[in-house]
Image (cartoon, rainbow, N blue to C red; front, side, top):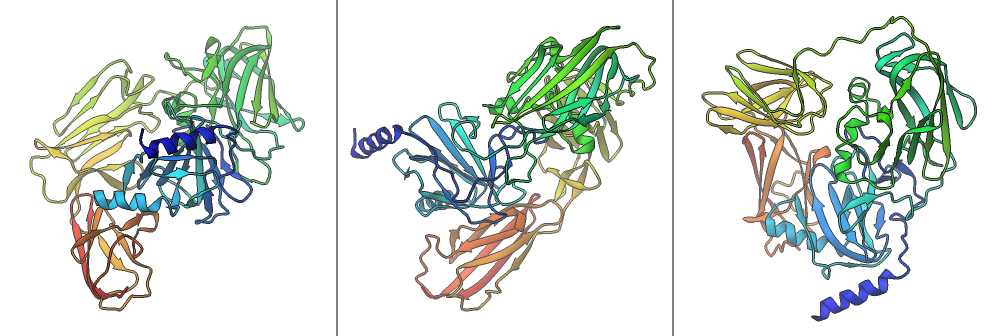
Length: 551
């Protein structure tokens, strides 16, 4: 055993005893997102910690360990850091503005080695040892983030499955009970309040912990859905809850508890969320029943979570919402088994060909072909597919795709700058430029109209500091704004005196930054800079200049 490995074992052995976590920030924790809360198409894998709407707050390691993974990407977690701890837990810090001083040299070395900004690498356990409280980075807004904050996770190191950090590691003061926003009843094979369609129930808040719905007259199989939120003290954000239970006359029909959740589990979210309601209203309603043939692993159902209502009988349907601090809220729905005339019949089904989940489909048209493999959908789903000379239209705004389908759009000749474009709402956006055997190829997980378009306009580059032929010895960095109005920015390369240099790209700001602290030695005074920017179909713009700097 070499000396470095011996030191690591000694370090981890000593750290494993009395392992307790500290907060990753130096200010009191306020949350803007909780573990496993509903996020449209996925469950949230960690907690979002507010950073006073600022970037650059110090982030600290929650415990001893070593850096096990570093990843930088344009979307997703942006700049992310993973630290393995001796107790078998990995802590994750995402959307960073920059890394700590002991980490940056390792990042720069890897970026210059690969000559690219976006990277992922896994340092050796002895490379970057971390002590509890060490500065490991600074809060930011990189990646798919909609404002400055720290996304924080705890995972089991062995399988990288996240678990709820608030359950044992971090404490946030919470004395408020969860709140209900709305309750929806779903007549699956029955009638409720004279309707075969989903309807919203009227609910009244009786006291701090109890909501009561107006009595429901129903018969047959019915399900319930709820929109809810929970707030922690000192925070106005509406977050998720920890545990949900539903029962009918004391018999449990539904139960879920968000103490741990794998990334495979999050792919099951659409089976719980009313996805058509989310598409139409941008609100998350959790369905407390199961419409699918396959199990949802983190949810208990009895009789699919459905209330079976018989005529002339009375029922009490009760929902309990709990947050992680133990605050509870209850909903009571009185139900009478009454067979009433139907005033609101079921809406007609979406038009189109029904796609059965268990089958493969190949649609052939004069200008296109479409391949949909089995299990693309979880339920039989209609797709309205229409074609004309220039466009193929695939419509159903409520369709949820488990995986991509393949589209071939035939085009005998592909001119420079041609690409496939997709229109879902009002505007066209880039889809694919892949071209094989006289056809454009795309793989997509959405519906819309698809056609071939052409982009001949290159990106723009704006020198923000006007460095051309100037002395810039006092400047800390060089900055450019880059933009492309049609297909978008694809990649960029920068060279200083003929050697590749690192430009960091902040997509939200459309900004490229080169920092003179980077491992570049400027031995001369006159310097030549070259920056090339490409859009997604290959149009490019080159910016060249000369500046003067002495170090």
